[in-house]
Length: 375
Image 1 (tube, one colour):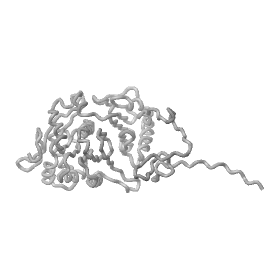
Image 2 (tube, rainbow, N blue to C red; image 1 turned 90 degrees about the vertical axis):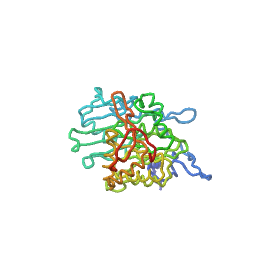
Image 3 (cartoon, one colour; image 1 turned 30 degrees about the vertical axis):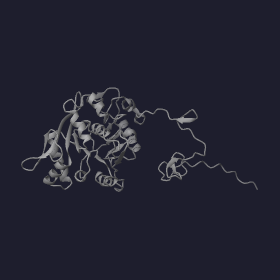
């Protein structure tokens, strides 16, 4: 009797999310010496979009705008920092000197929603009417925020923030006139003397860019631990450890907030502790950390001006359960300098440099000029 023919089994491709490195030639395995080395590829190599060159493989240059479909050219355009799609009512672009309408790209609301859904899925999350507001980070630190109806009354809103392809150094910022209104030497001395700094400004004022430039000037032996809601900092430094918050899943579990990450970071022996943006109860943990020997730290905060910083801190302190008096005394002790940034028609600028002090009534106020701790 002849046996029935059996089709050859298809090879099983390993899952990208698998936790085991065995069986996946692209991952690594532990060698006998304790180092991690590339796993030996024993099977045939399958080319997927690569080009052979000198016996190896080279991935062709990839456009970071490729996943953005009709917005690709804008995403790839040098100098673009933000792209906004307003529910079929036009596209706006910021090339570093303020928002301008773009007359070449117009998406219908249906096309905008389809693109938004696809981008959110690429970031590992889901957006629909039940969860209409979503923020995700894509490759190269591109940040995408989506708002759907009925929360948005004008259709699908898509906000895309683009990090620079290479971080700007303080020298590069200086060449652009960033320090024209302040004493640049004082700013650089803050890094050298490991001052704790608070960087403030409106959205899009350049807080993240400036913070990255400051951290790039830190001693190469420093261990920098950054904590962000959505990882945006790109620091040119040899020892940076980045932590990113995680939203809860559809069942409401698995979330890791900034306050939890800050507590974990304190166990990682940071030489410089950085919180990308203080917006809630994490301000309590940051103040506590900077008051217990963690020098050289930094945080950012949304504020309209130097004089408005105390009120913003008090509002966050109230959320964290801190009284105004307790918040004031901790803030004065924690921060050595406050740098306030502004976005002008000529570009982003460091507009004011100041410090936090207590007035005669014990209230928290911000005054121009720098002062050393305890001064």
